[in-house]
Image 1 (cartoon, rainbow, N blue to C red):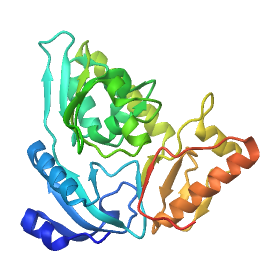
Image 2: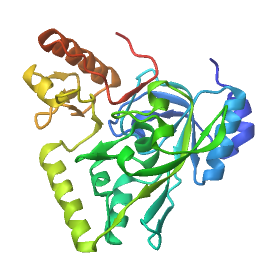
Image 3: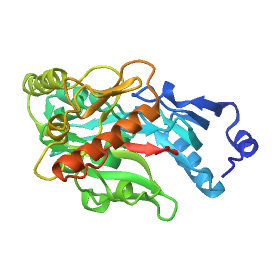
Length: 306
């Protein structure tokens, strides 16, 4: 569709940025041009923008940290809502203690703030380079825990149902997915409430530090989308990729990491097409050699050329 930029300019004024290159906003440092990018600082701004764009039938996505997505070199026809809603409230006087986080909150910041208060249960989140909204949308997890295990409720907005508060069952969680992600349903995650347990600052920080050290020892630094593929039932994507000889495999400026084969790293000058071709190569090799279909954990946005 043709995005009605004059209408959007009239609605959002100077806040609306036009023809923005997504490589500046994704952790993989790749991605073409989006028609419009709109920074949002409050949940009310988020609600208003989403409702107006739905009304106009303008495609849009909410962008947090820019991890776990691969934006096509052809760009994205629509608007990116840049989520700067960063408020955290820790209700430590409740039993159990709970944490209320807006969807733009960085997961590492969430984990560190709760650990510093002597609360445990969210230390796993420090290992994930993403935001609360993306984590809730995709049931992110690490170190034996995930959103499903720690979420009390998520405040969401949909075009048909308006604002709703959903528990994990309502989110339809499965491994690394929600019903919204699986079924590609339009949704905006506004905030989330997480449960924690009482501990001590020292004990919680020790768990967080151990998880962080493990991540640094086993996952590559540098620009990437994060974990590329979901682990198949009873196995690990990284093991299958390594067994298929894909560690270090390179196309253009992108390569499967020598440290962990389930990460594709931008080694300099990579394009989204480089990433995409590596993904397709890996899926073919693993299917041919082991009969296993690898499903991507990352989301592909825009049009890709096979």
